[in-house]
Image 1 (cartoon, rainbow, N blue to C red):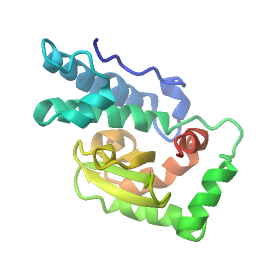
Image 2: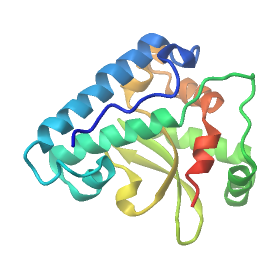
Image 3: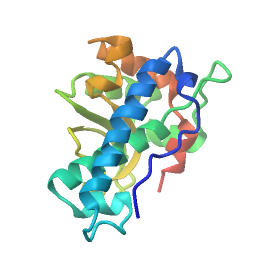
Length: 195
């Protein structure tokens, strides 16, 4: 079973001015599509061919893991985004309460998330994750293709801090990109990931 390019719930131009249509086209149709094509080539005629993308991430190493994890992380990241339709981005009660319980205030959480993302050295991802045993939320950084699902953590939110995610529109201003990201978070998706 081939891994397919995940379908976006919005048009490439719908995230402007946060991300331009050009940046989204490069990110989605070039970078993500390349990872998908690579993983399909790598799993052909292997035991991974009939597995789901998540299962491949959890059971592979080397080039298969790197491409599968990058495809998985990108699909998750694109699901974390939504166009602004009403000039405000309402945060559902359950996720907001859990964020306040774990970080004191939403602003504390936002500031810590931005700081972690800005200071995530090199290429990688910044995540809001949930420990399913304790329900505790935490913000963690991963490098390159690494993903917290390999550590048994539940993924709630992520931002891509590889340069290809923001360089077209922000050049080296990662902080500006991450701050603007907060206006375009799909909080309904984030809350739907709670366990």
